Length: 358
Image 1 (tube, rainbow, N blue to C red):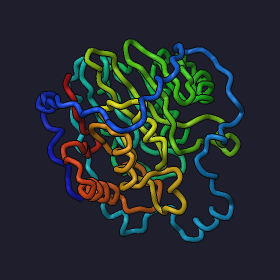
Image 2: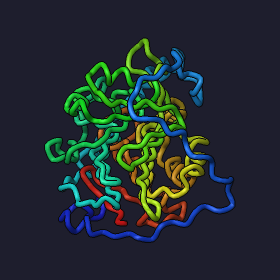
Image 3: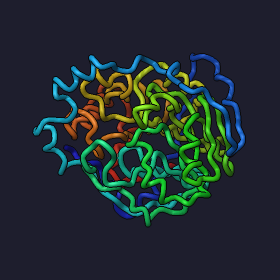
């Protein structure tokens, strides 16, 4: 696999990367939708017993699961695992980031260290070597836990084990503000967290000048045999206040391709960065409703109208049947075929960072 360009050497050099040209607003589309409803931080709320009505497609039944087992398509074949040694891994110290900057560091899978509006925010933090039902990590975590600055907030997209990791969560101070989907707050409160904000789609809350908007995704939730779709799933838009408008980043979590990307872009028309999954997509007949493939990730990026894209959800855990190095190769090919500027693609190695300066 082609290695990424050096973006992870001296942290001061990386921190000095300046990209000032903001993308123009979209024109010719629908009028911008009203802002999401703003909710107070914390507090307990009542939710329905199931969010199955939010599914974009029916979940696979027993016949589909039997077909999957019969095809033996749960994991890559031996040839698909030969690229593990070439997976991009280049840990480096976190770059400097001012309060008006946006810094993104990929820790692996869907775990990012984001600095925005002066806050340090973790997304779907998974620092464990392995998670339930999968082999150990293909690559180490890109940022040592002891290297993290104080964590100001955590956002969680949904409750699957590769996005919500109990051993990692136990490392956090119980005073850490946590932003979670509707129905997932009880899981955190039972573990002693004191500031848990549960949001429905198109709701938002603010923390020290940074707005956290919970947005829809084409996915589902389950953590046991008995809680399918009892909590919601989605992505997050983080936006810092500022004049002119502060930096903003969209974290997709886990999602299939569909109409929500266009609506998210219409409601948030000046996204600086979109963090989009590109892995865990094969076989398509099994996963297309809930996981984008690399080509669909490029389409989603175009729907969003974001300025930059950083891929994630690959090179960390073996969750499906595609060869381990294939997602990035296909993403780069789709990016070229779409005629997109190369510097708008932040194909970081695990442990790599990029910074957008004010």
